[in-house]
Length: 46
Image 1 (cartoon, rainbow, N blue to C red):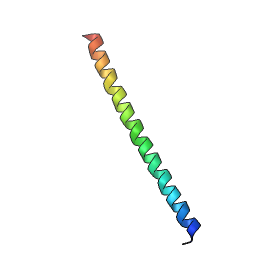
Image 2: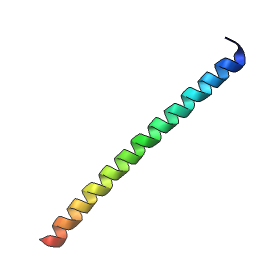
Image 3: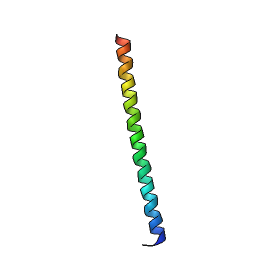
Image 4: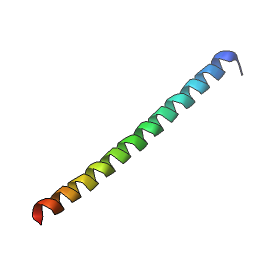
């Protein structure tokens, strides 16, 4: 393995890590929005 190959694989791993973190963040954000929507509906309907 040459140095450029190592840099490429490290860059690819970092990019995959960023993508995974972004996916987790979006999932948490959607969950929070869903909970807020349910709470707002319960307050509005009661």
